[in-house]
Image 1 (cartoon, helix red, strand yellow):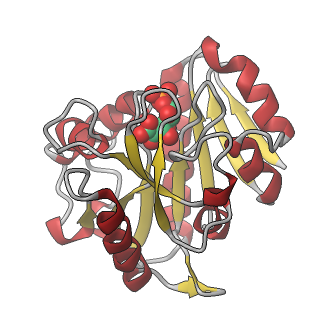
Image 2 (image 1 turned 90 degrees about the horizontal axis):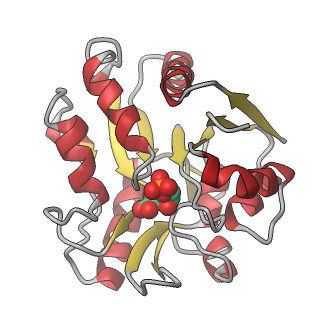
Image 3 (image 1 turned 180 degrees about the vertical axis):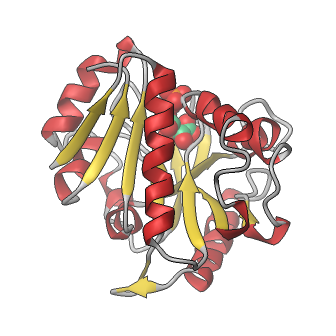
Length: 231
Ligand code: 6PG
């Protein structure tokens, strides 16, 4: 079952999500906190808020930052998830550089997916041989995708790889995507989705309709949470 946290504005949703992440950081004790973030447009306002209102509240020195997915473009591209995060957040707060782990969208996708999987496997603790993130922040596409796992790509939901190459069904853009199993193994999974155009798909995802990758994840996690301004 997913817990739905619905707010009357995107700003309230962003504050509540940030407080929920801070809570996860607090209960994890004093150790490093391994956080995987998504890209796309939705988190831009959230990251801006972190760089402004939470600059001195989030314990940046404990955060190890990973990406859920990356578009196979160089970091200077407006499409780059890392590039967006750097401009909006990383250039404005102090996270030790060794704790920031971008996916290299400019490199050969298949090789980079393996390199990044290896990196994550080496830095995170494992459970059933699967790396365990402390927290994963996922977006939801209007077509029900999450990470860059699109409908019809069930092989990636069940992949033995940690990260794999996926292809956007319309644009054919290659992506490097966190696969299903490590998402299911995370200590905490938060979905963050804003905007009325997502209300139909959110209803399906909340039901756990596993025709959609986001619904598939929801149906298989005991206690994920959604933060939204829609429902
Ligand atoms: C990406 C993402 C992706 C995103 C959804 C929602 O690289 O596109 O990480 O999974 O979360 O596509 O995208 P929007 O936030 O732009 O609606």
